[in-house]
Structure formats: structure tokens, C-alpha cells
Image (cartoon, rainbow, N blue to C red; front, side, top):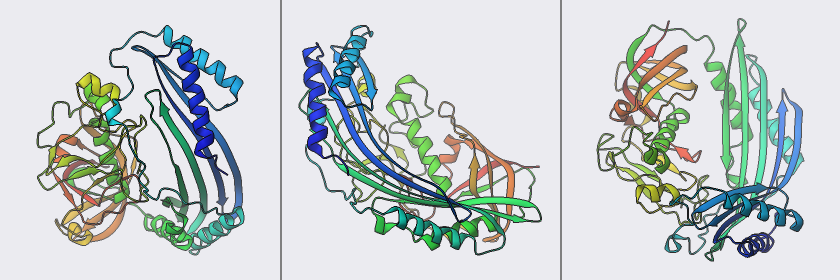
Amino acid sequence: MLKEQEFLNKIASYCIDNSKKLGATDIGVKVIHSVSENVSFRNKKLEESNRADSFALNLTTYINKKKSSINSSDLSESNLSKLIERCIEATKITPEDDSNSLPDIDLMSKKIKDLKLYDNTHYTNDKKIEFLQKVESAASINDKIVNTEAGFSENKKNFVLANSNGFSSGYKTSNFTSSCVAVSRINGAMERDYEFGSKRHLHDMLKPEDIGRIAAEKAIKKLGPKKIQSEKIGIIFDKRISKGILSTLANAVSASAISRGTSFLKDQIGNQIFTDNINIIDDPNIEKGLGSQNFDSEGVETNMLKIVDNGILKNYLIDTYYGKKLNLKSNGRSGGTTNLYFENGALDFNELLKLEKKFLYITETIGHGGNIITGDYSVGASGYMIEDGEITYPVSEITIAGNFKDMFKNIVLANDLEFKYSTNAPTLLIKEMTVAGK
């Protein structure tokens, strides 16, 4: 059972009051109670079942422009007193930084919107086991599948975020996640693939039979991959890969990267960085969204933010500290993006496949690959060859490379956007990239 707001508020107030007594001029504190339950299967046998019930506290104290933070999982009064003393002492010997401060009071969140982020439903261990048995049975129906793994997790969290300017707020969230990894084999060669689903509410979960079936189908489809020659070719990124391009963009437009001068998008506000039909939105107000929130990690209200509008870069992701360094107000992005996505394109998936005679369709990448300082991009990859709009054979052991400045201006989007993660993108074509093969 999650602790209620009253309990968490009491801890936060204790920290704020006692920090003030010891000389702190400003204080921020976050108190979290989380409960998680996890069950995993391997080859139709129960492998692990565990439950974790934990507390976390983060205390930040300021003495004018000096700042330090401390964390603990022990919320006993005796420990809290020691933590506060240690944090204050650390603050006293920390160098001053003019950008250190709490957020402006007028930017703080004023009310909690009901974004349907919490489902009180509890899925018992027996039901989790039954769910995973169905997942693994569906994944194992074909003889080519030689190994399966499946997992189910249920996570509930309640938190309070408070500061010495009078802000105090919080709410409950939940998350139900299931996944399946399937390994296929033919003639001694093996391939693996997976299916994954995560939802705020249990009843929105993908059916267990579908999770297992999709994982198996993907793994079997990858069998017998071919190596290809090096060439320049159009690349289509599967939705679970295309979202990574947005993640790189988010890192590149973070106020921290911009203020340090470590982003290839520095000084690009107002400039065309994509084609004029590309829009990128970060929306914290999507009901049941995995990235939805009422306020950021500092308590600043978060609202819908258009990062790219008709191809033009409009906004950075700004928190209080780096915002001050850039002389900009926080737009509620301390902690990063919320629900970040490309707006849908005009073409359906099949139309995208037929734009050119030949494409590579990438379903898996290996390595981080993106350099936000230079914009260079290079990753190991595997996927399928597309010829005349049809998947012809699987491809592996290739490297794809380009530079985001060029890639951004050669993007064509399909209209198959799904909100499956906190960062989402439709299937995405980049008209030409370098492919290194055999």
C-alpha cells in the first residue's frame, strides 16, 4: 500500500523547517514512496519473483548562491536530522554560483490536472504468472523458437515535491509493463527479437498472446540474414528505432548542452533545421501518457511545447539553472522531455515503402551512435531489404552513418504514429545514408 500525501508532506515539511533553522536560505525536497513487483519466466518456467517497497528522499539546500544536495532511503527522524546537518555543512563549503536558485514563484504549478496516471488495480502474483504463461505459450508455438524469456512488472509511486517558497504538491502514478524475448534457430544460426508494452492502466495492456506471438514472428523473420555491399541508399527506420532520432534531438536542444556550447544546434533558434512539413511536439498533458506530468522535477508547470514548427527550431528544453545561464525562463523541462513526438506524416506505411525501388528497413541498431557536438551519427544495424515495396530478405552486420544536419533535412514521415513510449515517432525515411557492408 502506498503512503498517502499527508505522510510524505510531513517528511518534506520536517526537512524544510529544520534546514531553515540551521541557516539554509532556500530548500527543495522530494520524497518518494514506490512499490514494485516483478515476475519473470524463462522457457516456460518461473525464474524470478520479487517485490520492492522503498522510500527515497532528495534534499537540496541553498545558502544564498551556494548549493548542495543529499539523498537517502532512510526516513527516520534521527537519520533525517543527520542528513540535514550534513547537507548544510556541505553547502557552506561549496563555491558560489550565480545561477543557483529555486525556480521563480510565478512559474510554479498551481493545480493538479487529472491526467489518469494512476490505476489502483493490483495484479496478484498468480495473475502475473498466468499472464506470462500465456505469453510464453504463444511465443513457443513454432518449432523454430528455441528460447523464450518473458517478464511482467507492476510499479506504483507516490511523491511530494516541496520547497521553501511555499510550493508543495505531488500525485500517484502507476506503470504496468510486459515483455517477451524470443530466440529463433535454423541450421545452427540463431536470431533474437522482442515485443514490449508499457501502460499506465492495466486494462490497456497488450494481450499476452499478442506479446508472445509478435516476439516470435519477429525473431523467425530475421533468420537467414544476408550481408550486403557498401552503398548509399535510403534508410527506413522502424518506429522503435526512429524515436531514437528524437532522443538525440532532445539532448541537442537541452539548455545544458546549449549553454556549454556542446550541441550542433547551438544558435539555431529560428532557423530551418528540418523540411517545412516537420513538426515536433513535447506534450505533458496526454491522458495516460508514459511521460505525462503536471510539473517538472523543480515544480515548474509544464505545458505543451512546440520544439520544431514547420521545420523551424522554436524552443530549447530549459530548466532553472541553465536557463539563467542563457538568460531564459524555465519552460518546465527540468528532467527532460515529457511525451515527445513527431506529428504524423502524410503517407501510410506501404506508400512509404514504394517511394523508391530499393530501401533498407532498419529494425535494430547497436551502440549509441549519436554525437550531439558534431551531429555525426554511426551505428551498427540490422533489418530488411525492401525492393519494389516488398520485404525481400533480412540483412545484418551493417553500419549506417550520416550527419544529423543532413538527416533532418531529408526526413519523410509515415502516418503510423503510436504512443507506446514517452518518446514516439512514426516510421521514418531518410532519403540517403551511407551503409557499410561487406
